[in-house]
Image (cartoon, rainbow, N blue to C red; front, side, top):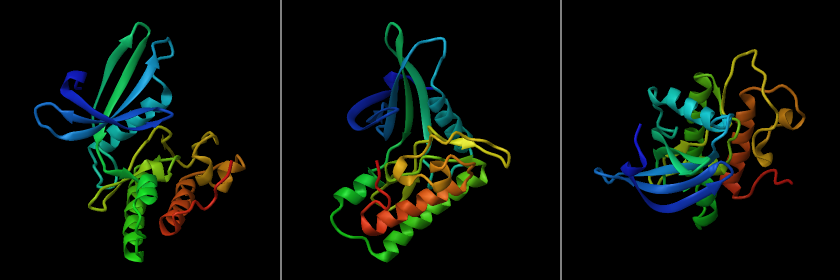
Length: 214
């Protein structure tokens, strides 16, 4: 494990429910990474379950490595002040998330490029499912895009290992991408990830969400 002194903060590149993401440069190598910083209160309950899940999933996949899954590089704790601390998780950095890419890149994508994105998303999710991991929060904000058109699936805070006998909570997946079985609070499995991909593919082709709802 590294430490805060190993990385220089460059800029904030994103903010979400589970923390703030910064672009960082590793001292000595000048390689750029993304650092997710999660503020936590020091209590008897310990580190939040979502954070432990994300690190556990990425650590388990790290030795297998897949080109369409974000790679975990480092994780370390820093203290903020008395009673608070930060968990810092360092990943490979990508150029956009898919939501920003579709919003800010003005030109439309042709069918071959859309298919190229789709194939990579399916291959990444197939890799997760083959290794008994269900993502449970697939959405454009959690799919990263590089300038060379490579796709990386990210954010495993809601991911779970599964089996044929697993039972899961139904309060997962951003509403627009939730499958009917999750909305109806029924039993669900890896098919819920495939539903989310279908919604995402519609958005890639049309640049409009398929099921916007509140």
